[in-house]
Length: 244
Image 1 (spheres, rainbow, N blue to C red):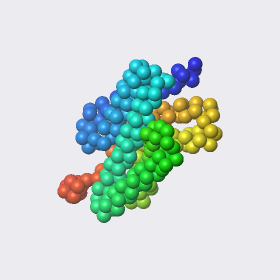
Image 2 (cartoon, rainbow, N blue to C red):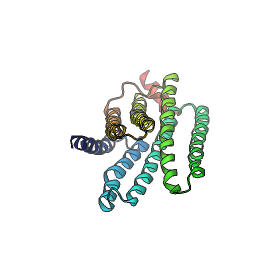
Image 3 (cartoon, rainbow, N blue to C red):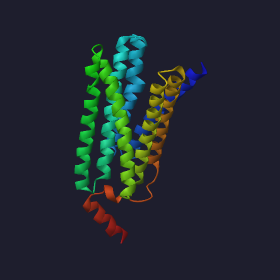
Image 4 (cartoon, rainbow, N blue to C red):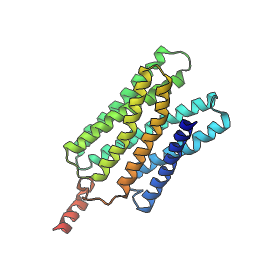
């Protein structure tokens, strides 16, 4: 009973933080600049706080309809996370057009590779193909997002990109992916035992709360340095003229 209360408390805390983050983006006037982040958080809120509870209430936990809807929305969230990381890569490469061209090819190749590997499930299973493909695809895409996010963080450090906000946003989404990936790996190694399943149900909302708190701090804090690399040439020249 205490575990159930704690898990639901974390989930509702996550819903509140999602609303706070969207409101903070609108209040600070950064919703347009951080459009990808705002859309992803809005998707999180609509899926987790509105759509899934409504379908669960109407059809029940054991229904096939809820099962299909859950994994379909999980694919949507995985795609949203992938597109968000692509937006972060684009921001990091704003002043390096050649690097962005190469990075874009890498991102497209990674997505096609995940799609192809996930499609292999269709050759091994002939029942419930669509459901098996959705589960495999979402889990593979989440793991790919973790790898890409790690590469992005390394790239930010190597290129010495002066963008504190981007660094915090990347760290936030890394918290989400790292915790869930570790727990899913444990779940597979222990053959779906009860303890790893309980740990996953606790760790998932905890990582989401950690990610949202990091993002709220990133949006709310006053930048210590001007993110020169994300400015256009005219804006950068104007910033230099003002500083002189």
